[in-house]
Length: 397
Image (cartoon, rainbow, N blue to C red; front, side):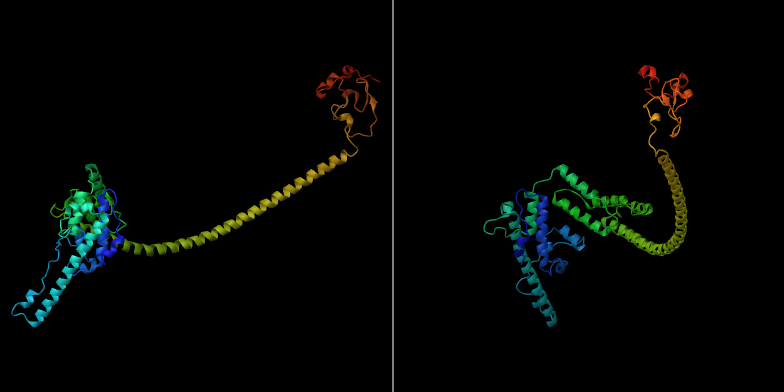
């Protein structure tokens, strides 16, 4: 069954890096999480995962910092304890059943080791693991753990000091988002610490604990009194487990208080919403009245403007009609500029008057002798381009 998971493995081509080994380890670990185990802690849940990932990583998975990895040993063909003299039949039956379970666990372990080796060789090729290969037995005495460790320490390219420092600083410096679970943050930080060992980067639980404490300060999730209470603990009390317990408790208290406050706020918000609705209704009625008043004023102004416009139009039409009526007999050519030496503005529209001879210009015209443009007294009334009959040479009659 495990070998059939080969299709899920992505083969590493080219340079082998710590990241590619992590990916390979994760893929094989996922495949090994499908075969139940009665030997390892949480084996019914995580199956044979313990045979793939290091002890430190499995401790994080099962949340047991004291767990020790022990591979199953050959229980032998018989249940030796059941053959001891004095053992009752009931005890013997129980010991035999236990022995059979141990045999099954050991057989499954051997099978899983062979399958894991095959998956590793498929993922990286024989050359990457050649130093572990022995004559006659090939990789018979190697384990999945030893093969992955060889890939990390002997095959994968090494990170420079600068790269190691940057990787470590970024991991420990990653801030915690207070909107997410604080326990998930602690688990992720613990996993990161184990990844440092995979890359040959030295660290410690104390360093991780100090980094987590700094992130708690930065989160601004806790009060100053709470942070000071943590800082006042002795170094012996500031363990990784103590830090998780302390800040998880404070975080849960904060969440509980926030929920209670939110519930109380919902009642306040409901009352406030009712007040605002009532105020809105009153304001709506006042706004409606004001709008109606403004509409009435606007209508009055429009009516006044319409009446004024109508009156102005009627006056304009009256003036136009008067002009048309006054000019109905044709234009008075005597008053047109520059059509003759006539006095514009004088005798306009007097079509029934008789012309008289002007003693000054010598023409038979309607204008009075005193209004003739030939007189210097009327020089200001002359139009542009006016010329005296003396200059034009027009004969007087």
